Length: 177
Image (cartoon, rainbow, N blue to C red; front, side, top):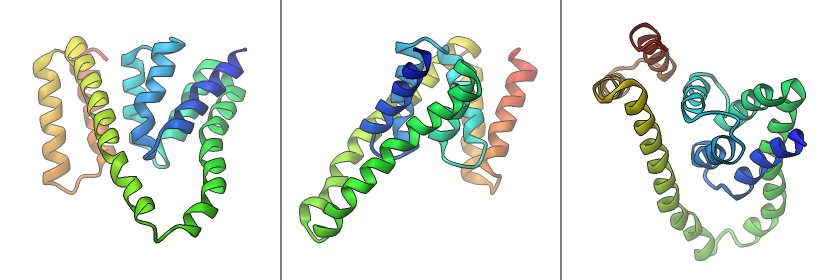
């Protein structure tokens, strides 16, 4: 039963989500934290931060880690397969239609309608992580880490993985993480 739940927890968000890994993260969080309770919001946020520091698509990294955490190596395989199967199926089905109607105004404007939805989902994810950070580390630490990370990312050429590692290091040393 756990394998079926694991499959559904990653298949459904990847099937209904549009816009790539970052757009489906809130949907995966809802399944993993809200529906099944396999992780806390804090653990999910830490997993996401660590996953963002590694190469490859975020959704497959999250699926592999969470699947392994929940049900071992076979759980990791199930979760990763559930993550990539919807994209593969949809790409195969949509390829013919998109090729046939590629010059249509409706097809071109379809992605324009999706952008506001993705923006709202990302905003909700940011608010969720901010609220979790404030409740666990405090307002000033959360704002400080965010400000330093933003300054490093926008003002220097430091790789984002290093910025994440610096934030993790700060949390481990000063916040008892």
